[in-house]
Length: 261
View 1 (cartoon, rainbow, N blue to C red):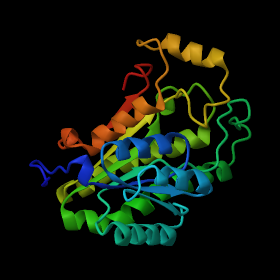
View 2 (view 1 turned 30 degrees about the vertical axis):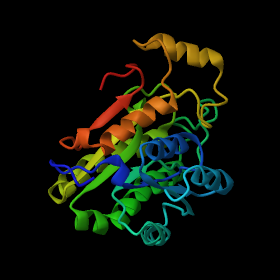
View 3 (view 1 turned 180 degrees about the vertical axis):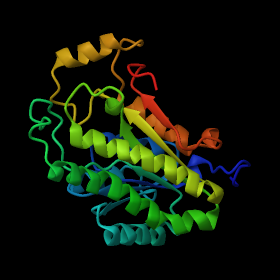
View 4 (view 1 turned 45 degrees about the vertical axis):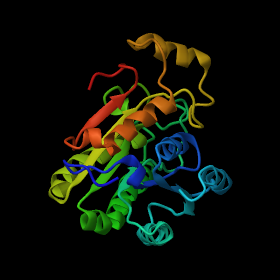
């Protein structure tokens, strides 16, 4: 298929980088793109076995590559390796990778114990990581006159019910970067959006969540259920698809209506 009007590209013609795709939400997002015919770079840091297994599910269309997204040189090498392998430019970047983090409200530092080191670690992985991937993919996107950047956020900065100060602050900064990048890159045919979720049923991060918490969240949503990773991935696909070609700089909250954005 040829490029459609209105600065869009069918999913099955896109080369998509999904960071942190070896497991959890990232793996669901990678599988969603593969299910629609896209070629996918399955980026991972430590989950090598799982990433390779995922890549083997779509021979010829998926490639697992290890890279620390906070390392600009490693990201540049990953993009170069992928573009040589697939013989086409990266068109789409999904910034999903998350620095080591324990989703346990009781174990997270409260205001009196929060350190700059806690914040810095999250900013390095979340914000610096996104900057590195965008800058590495930017020459190819500008060459094609097309690009999609989709950042993964959280509903916690609208509904901070747990003291994830460091994680939430980094994701809030990523939303600001989403908006400023959208303004800067729009003239090059590149859109930049964010998809924000809450508790998902179920990922590696939420596997230890008590059933009572799932029940409470479900009862608090208009849909009376907890969003699944597959449903969340659908929204990511939307921002990469031709149907979103006139949308940029936006933050879509996908949590069953718990938070009204």
